[in-house]
Length: 97
Image 1 (cartoon, rainbow, N blue to C red):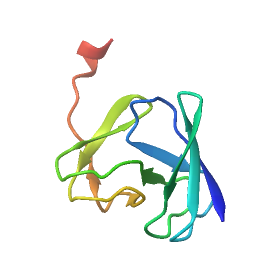
Image 2 (image 1 turned 180 degrees about the horizontal axis):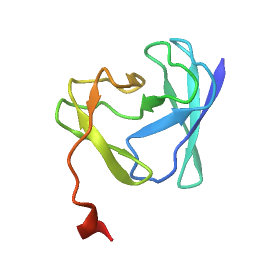
Image 3 (image 1 turned 45 degrees about the horizontal axis):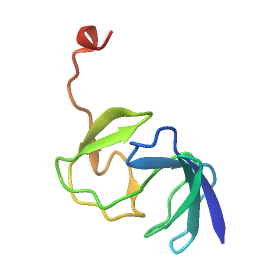
Image 4 (image 1 turned 45 degrees about the vertical axis):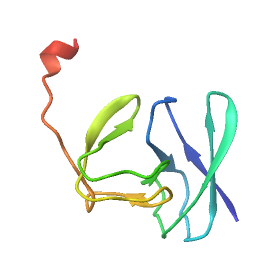
C-alpha cells in the first residue's frame, strides 16, 4: 500500500511519514517537484523519519535543509531514523544568524 511522507528541502536525507508505515509499504514523497518513493524496510510510526538513502555511522542527518544530528549506526534506505540511531550534534547558533 502506498503511504505518504513529507520532504521539506531537496538536500534532506530523511522524510517524515504522515501515517503509520508497515514494512514493505511504498512511501511516496516529492523532491524538486518530482514524485519519488522508497520501500519501508521496517514498521515506522506516523510522524517519524524514514531514510531516503543508505546512511553510514557518523554521517549527518539532514531535515529542513539543516543538520539535525549524526548517525550512531548504519541504516539502509527505507529504515526508521529515530533516537536509536541518531544523536544530537553541538551547533554554534550565533554563527548561523
